[in-house]
Image (cartoon, rainbow, N blue to C red; front, side, top):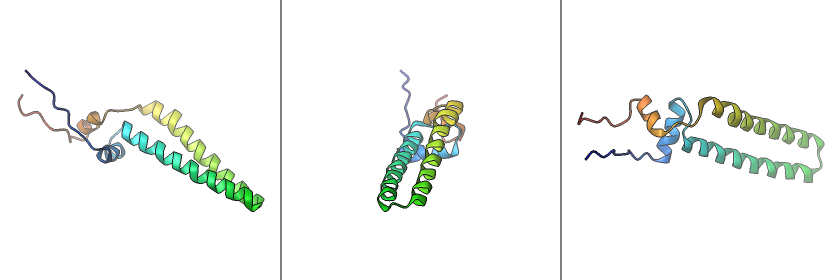
Length: 105
């Protein structure tokens, strides 16, 4: 009876593989979404500080940062991910020749 042994890859290794191999794996995409969430929280905090300070130029600058961050997220989400798609980590391992070879052939 032949069993496939699935190699366990840590999320850190999966994110590094996502940076090196073509395509986007799920842990890399989750890391990017978390980074954008934290960026959104920071920009919200900066916007609240800009409102309380009362300086209009500060509001304009923070608003521009929000436009840049949201357009980057939309472009990554709609265009880049739609073109490349989510790729399993095992496929990325095989493309980089890092997959464990089966010597019982």
